[in-house]
Length: 220
Image (tube, rainbow, N blue to C red; front, side, top):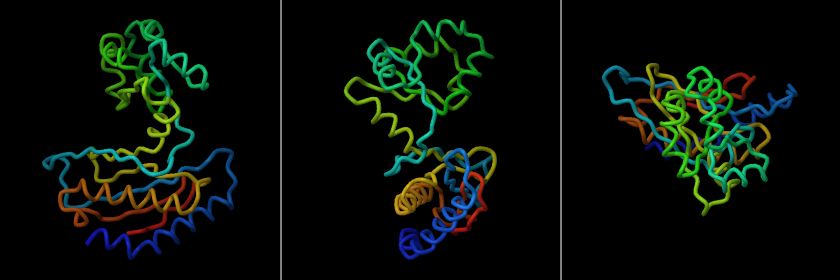
C-alpha cells in the first residue's frame, strides 16, 4: 500500500519540490537553504509506546555545509589537515579538562564527529558523557575508507527519533541540488520513516516539505 502511494504520488512530490525550489529562487539568501521534511504522527503515545530511532543513508548529499570535526589518531589528524577539515588530537581533548561547559560548547560548534578507533575508546574517559548527551557521539572511521567518503556519508544520513512530541523535522536536501535528486532523497526518507512506525501509514498524520526560509508544502 504505502509504496504504491509514493509511486502514484511522485507527481505530487515533484510539483511540491518544484514549488519550494521556485520560492527559494525568488529570495536569494547568502546561505544555501536546506530542504526539510516535517512529519506529524498520530495514534502514538510517546509515554507508553516504544520510542523508535533509526537512520538511513540517502542517495545524494543532503547537507553539504554540515560542520564535522575529526577526533583523530596521528593518521586521521594528518588526513583531516590535508583536506582542510577541523580535527582534535587526544591532547586537544585532554585540554578540556572534563570541563562540562567547554565540552558542551565544543559539541555545539559541530553537527557531527568522526573518530579513529583508538580515540572512540578514550572519549568517555577524556570527555565524559558530553557528546553523548548532545546526541553527537562520534561515528567510527577506519584507515580503509577515505575521509571525504565518510564525510559525504554523514552529510547524506538522516536520523528519525521519536522524543516527547509527535512531530519531527529532518534535512533531506538543499536548494542547489538537482530537482530529481531531492525527490529521490524524499522518497527514500519517507519510506524509511514509515517502515519504523508501528502501524506504518496509519501513524502518519501529515508530511510537509519546506526550505529553511520558505513556506511549507503539504505532500501527505
